Image (cartoon, rainbow, N blue to C red; front, side, top):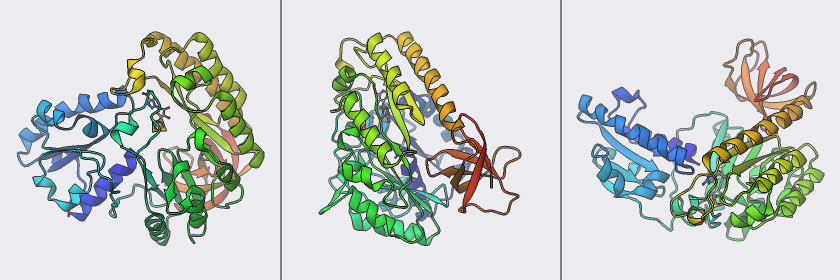
Length: 415
Ligand code: 5AD
Ligand code: SF4
């Protein structure tokens, strides 16, 4: 979501006549921030001070702060850092287009009931596109800051989304990643998320559809059935579990228990046996005992995810869990995280070994940064593949590749 916001900021500024330059040569610097965990927020605070010296070298320089820290802190940022000229909240990016960015002042963090339709996007990739379908979140998981920084849930109109994707297809894009905090509650008139997927599946030129993220409490049978039925919908789902302990899931306000989650996995796998499933895990949530932690390890063993993103619980201001008494010690979190990661590494290795010798479909999306390989791409199951092709191919091609050498973080193959 945040990465796509940066693409929009770049697009809006380009529209206003700006060009990208090195930070030392720039007249305008915009810092896009994240506050999902304290570590992300700290990155902003450790960098923002350093930008003051840029102003000494270039008196015309303007500095803006946007994103979730901007939304959270508003004018506090201006008070604390005199060299910052303006602050824009998560629903205020259009101001970069409506006004001359050199003259924007103050903090603007008002929530708007309307969706900001931003039609100028400078995309990083020429084959894969990020596309917002929803903004905000109403779920209030007890650890999470997103409902506060991104506001209440709002769906983008289906017509606008389809127009954007048709335009992308005409420009040669092959893959779309639909973005929303909980795509399953997408609604546009009488249409739901599956209706949207069906429409996108009909757009000529688009070959692959992905989405992120789906909340287990709302994963419908209709969506599960779309896998394998909609030919462009890739066989991968990111389904955040967060914890293998039903007691902790309840404290997290996730609205499902471990058994519910297992049922979803078995329904997904009975529909598409080789579907790739990835997840998010938080370790060291308040009140998490050794027993709860073991439940999470057991879940990893039982489910065998293709990959996980694992995080130490981080206390976020204003969230329910930040007021819980029994916070877990830092060294315990650290140890539990490494136990989780070590276990998952062996599972990832086993999963990748299974692909050895198999033929997979790869969408080439970049030039290789690894010696002896020409290109990088992704399988439909979202695994990274380095491939040798004797340079007969180009970015955007979809090819059949035999996996010769599976590694932990990528697969090596030959055309
Ligand atoms: N601490 C640690 N991890 C968090 N996440 C969200 N909030 C927190 C927090 N306070 C993780 C969740 C979520 C992912 C995007 O970030 O696992 O799924
Ligand atoms: Fe945060 Fe939960 Fe909403 Fe995801 S569903 S953004 S974890 S509150």
